Image 1: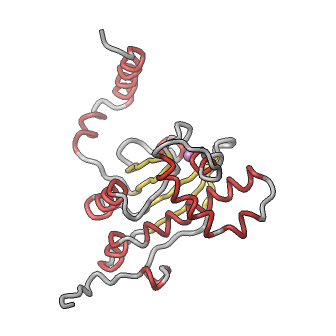
Image 2: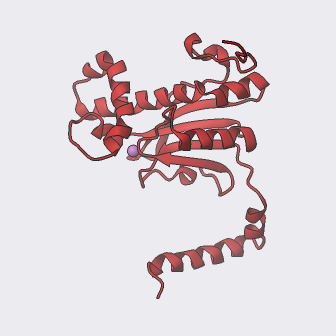
Image 3: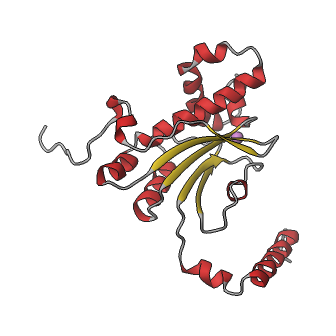
Length: 217
Ligand code: CO
């Protein structure tokens, strides 16, 4: 007997509904994907990437992890980004955080949760960097939400500091990196207005000229 019967039943219904609308839907899907966007979002089950932005399968390349982080040493993140930019040639990278994020909340507390404490350290760094502003917000919920926004902005920068994005810009490939936040209580998306699309917007210490390889020590 197959476990989780309801999910397989849902799957059969979904296939039927898709085929009713479009007979060749699955054969077309099996051919290739051609997404314009890479979505980096939180694993939270209430933030379904495709649904929020009204995109169909094949239109959005998705990477999700706890609290939508892009640590510059994470091979999972780096591999997704490189594949999306170098092979899929996506034009927009979207980091989308959300208000009420449990990961962000946990990063402001001193409880021990497990391995995830080490992952969330990245957000503690964001807090430390913006302590003055955050400490000045008396309401805890508002402070958490502001940290969620600042966290998104930091991940946008982390992405732009990679050799992957800078390499694309150097080759003349157009890539814009956006920071958004999602409000689960309304369904609304907010643009945090921190979009970067060229190397001049990157702080000079983080700039790497990929054509300028050092050959001697
Ligand atoms: Co979250």
